[in-house]
Length: 238
Image (cartoon, rainbow, N blue to C red):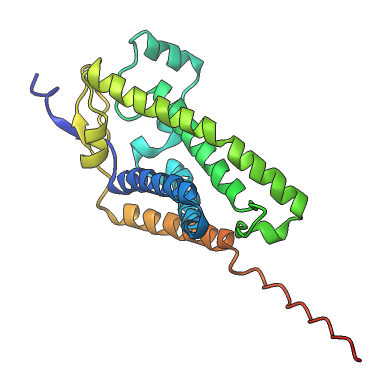
């Protein structure tokens, strides 16, 4: 019993920072787009931050600690059915929750990418909009707006699942994402190793952050040459 009452490491510091930073940036993007006007510059900044975070998380899914890696929690239909039957015992994301993770990463990543090419037909253009023609700018803007209800749906499902686990299963999923530790579930034998404080962890983190920042730089469009000024039309020589 003492073995089952101890806390075990689940989420490393970088992954927890990613999670709450993504929440903050999504909230900021929603608020700024609702305000409109000059706040659209903030909306663009939050969108670039979301893109950078998603790029970082995709890398961390391959080189991060055990519970962060996709190969640890992304499973096929058989494992999902086993989980629904109560036959799955593990820590981190369960096989069904993995689908939510993939959906969130995919949809928010796609929304951020589309936002790079948008045009509101008034004054705001995405940072990479100059790279495509006007028709494609409007088309991608339409897709960007059409995707918003689906994002709301997946967020509500995600929050609803957290509430369900807290109320029905008495399993607090928020606390481990704050502290990094959770109570050892019954029947779990394979306890993740702590890989948070060594040099390998720091090196992998530095490299993945560098790649994410490079992607954000490219996505910001600051490297695109400014359009040449239009020559003034000469006046009539009377």
